[in-house]
Image (cartoon, rainbow, N blue to C red; front, top):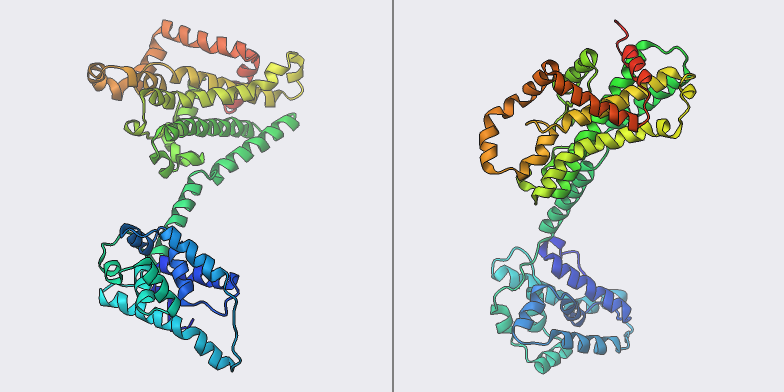
Length: 426
């Protein structure tokens, strides 16, 4: 084909039709694509405007395609002896007329590019002998084809390219939503490295013990909030992906004061793993009350899974003597497990602002929510007051924590030692 024809002059579907025509001509050993091959390429494009219009006018395009394929496929090529320049002109002339006519056809109706219907009309209005015979046999009314309403709005090359770029951008965005954060990977690596250091060093630096436990707490915080976000995502709230909650990046979940300084302060003052991070979940987007409750429960569930994984050595080894050789390491592990357990119990209390209330909230009547609304902002403060000033509340809380630690086979002396090592400046 001559280079005067640009891809931008044709719709994507028309380009595909021409591509099918060239491929079919090559398969059938034709000397070059002809208007008959173009007709075949048009009929192959089942979802394009040309075929849809013919079908709407009552033509059996599948039968027409079979007849074209049978006749063109059985033809034997004939080559006349002539110069290469003459041969090139002879081969392209009929197809050139069709393509120029198609461009004129599109231009006449103000279309920005040639559609498959324009190609069909130009092929039928500039027929070769065999196309004229087919047109008569099929009784195609060219004017009816030209004037029929558009059945399929075809795309320009520019539109297709833009859609492709948008699709690639969306795919890349989806991949980035699930890509592990380098910050989380760095923290996890630091946690492992510090754990190895504590395990292999008889008298480790106190500040590195502090760093091991604090980094372990931040990692567990990321896992907790990731649990919320992941369950919410599968429940229907896809906004958590756009906010970066599925990357395990602690910076997406944390507030410098509420998420890190306050939990560390509570640990120093009272030895409690205070929940710190928070993700915004659009509960209205989650498809059922059951999934809303599961999204609230997923955070403590992630803490529980992390605690069990950390406790596997304690569950597998019952001899207390084994902890003596690497005492600082096991004390740090015990303290991390202790923090997970206290955070789970704390978080599951049915107090507004905590996950325990979030689990119940979808099932509470609207009247209860209205009655409790004034207290939602003060739920956490109320909980702290109960913890420090109500002895019965503290007794129940610590009773549940100690029972869970016994089930995990965590020696209390290791937790006490861990708290002492953590407060290394006292």
